[in-house]
Image 1 (cartoon, helix red, strand yellow):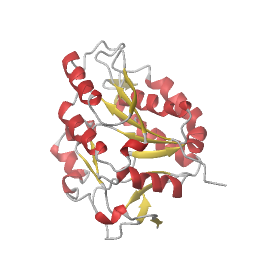
Image 2: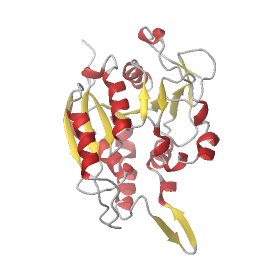
Image 3: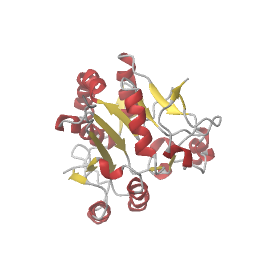
Length: 270
């Protein structure tokens, strides 16, 4: 009896960053297994319904959509939100793609450049470690073993995989989180008593990480990165030179392509 075919979707979040979208979608198109995956693209809208603030122009959103429309990826669905709801709300939509019958979903934003073997390696990780969550970005290379995986202790989730059984475990808590973030303009600041809190401190990645940890799922990353983060202009935590360097983003490895990845069939977890 043959092995059951695993149904995989790729989700990709875009907004108004034309140059970033050109770079990141081009990198995904070059992935060796890009055409074996069903793609779903979600774009945030212009105006937040709670604060009435405008965060983008129709012209820029259309320019980004044009890049997506002309992509060689097998895009089954493109959805532009009627309002500006935030990256976490778009990520929540991306996770709902599980409801379309997929076993595994890969999640990408418009600020991560990936190697041509990224999708292949992510698939191997998801098969080997189905009860965890993982991605192939690392701030700096540690060692020389391409197979070696370690645990990620911080909040970030860039270019990650998630399997259906784990999603089913975290879904209740995740939906509660979504209910809360719908009540706020993600870009605004709000008060707890006399203390001003920036809403990004309650980030989507933190929530997913905590929910997964609750069910014993760990975050896995390679000791050698296969991607590069280019989102300095978009991430609130990295917009200043001070924080960019503090997070070690200025020292990212320039090399993310390795010929050996074409033949790698498994990882080793340490």
